[in-house]
Length: 223
Length: 223
Image (cartoon, rainbow over all chains, first blue to last red; front, side):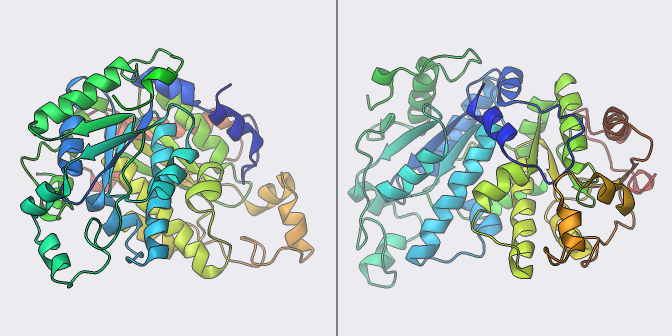
C-alpha cells in the first residue's frame, strides 16, 4: 500500500461513503509510465533555473513524459499573489509551492519548481512533504560573478546601489545545497547541454519508466 | 496563441532568458489527448460529492484520461492547513483551491474539486480564474432531508443541537447553482449511475478528446 493510499483511507471525507472507488497513486503512475518526482531547482537569480527547467520540460515532453513547471510566472501572480517579500511571506511562499508540488507528485506528474529558494531549511521542509526518492534537488551552480554580469533585469545593479535590500548573493545569504541529487555546473555548457545532463540523470535514476524501482542510496547524491 | 502562452510571454521570469523553449498548454493537451477542465463539484454535506467524484475519476482512468481530485483529504491537511473556518479563511480556502485547479488545468489535467463551496460568489471567483469552457459546475443535487438522514459523521445532528454553528443547510445558506453545466439529481441513482452521467456529459461536450472544439453555448448550461 502506498503512503498515498494509506493516507486516503485514514482521513475522513466530508461526504458519505457509499462505496469508495478511489484512484490510487499507483494507478496514475501506471497510466503515465514514469516515476512522479519533484525536481526542485535552486540557484542564484540569473543562474538559469527557469531557462534550464523549461528546456528540461521540453525534453521530457518529447519523451512523452508528463511534467509541469511551477515558477514565478504561474505562482506569484496566482496562488501566492497575497504574499509579499517579508521573511514570513517568503517562508509561506516556499511552503505553498512545496505543498502544490506534492499534489502534482500525487497526481503522477514530474513537477519542476524554479525558485531561488536560498535557505536550506525551506528546501528541507519541501523535501519532507514527499516520500523518499520523490524529491531531487537540482542545483543550478552558476558563479555569482557570472549571474551579476548577466543581470538580465538589472536587479544586481540595484542591489549593489542599495535600492533593493536583502538580495540573495549580495546582502542576503545563498545557502548552496550540500548534497544535491543533481548538480549542474553551468560553466561552458549551453542550456541544451545542461538540460540534457538533467534528463540523463533522471533516466539513470529510473524516473522515466513506471517500473517501481528501489531508490539507490549511492545514486541519491551529487555527481 | 493560447491565453497561457500569451501570459507566459508577457510575464517576467526571475532568470536570464538565453532562449526559451517553453512547453505550451497546447503541447500538454496534445500529449494527454483530452481537453483540460475543472469539474467543480458542489453540494450539501453528505450529498455524495467526494464519492461521485472518486467514481468519475475511476471511469476517466479506465478511459486513459489524466485526472486529479482535490478534496478535503489532500488540501485541508496540506496546502490549506493554516486556515480555519472563519468567513475570511473559508474564502481563502476556496480561492487557493481555485488557483491550484487552474495550475492543474494548465498542466493539461482534468481536475475535480469536491468541496461544499456553498456561495455563488466563491464559485464564480474560481470560474473566473480559467478560460471559458475550462470550468464546469457539477451540482450534486441531493435533498437536505436525505443528506441529514444519512448524516455519515453526525454533523447534522450536532448542528441541530447547536453544537456546530454556521453549518451549511441548517443555519448557513447553501446557494444552489443557477445554471450548472452538469446537474446530477442523485435521487434513485446509484453512485455508478451518477458517475456515468457525468462522464457521458463530458464526452458529449468534447472534453475527452484532444481535438480543439469550440465550446457550444447551448451545451454550457443545465440539462
